[in-house]
Image 1 (tube, rainbow, N blue to C red):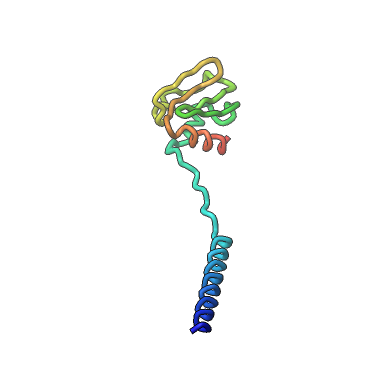
Image 2: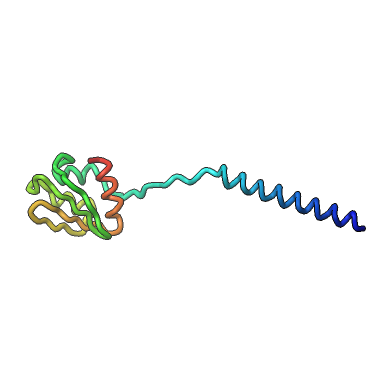
Length: 116
């Protein structure tokens, strides 16, 4: 009976070692999930054209709810087109335009930067 106990212990240790090596192999070779960029749902091409084209943009930034764009020529923007694209409000000063888009502002900024 003593030899059988050692045999069962040895088989258990080997089984645990194989299981741990299998888990280690799986975790090491698992492919990471690719990050999916958030889509804003706004037609960026139309938004850029309403802002006077990508050549009219100096800088793009965003906060929690708004996208702020610094423009070279602020007189050429088309506020009604921007509102039609989903902006709930537009604030314009000398050379900056702030457009309130809500939660999608960061995604809009990223998509605009990719196009400019």
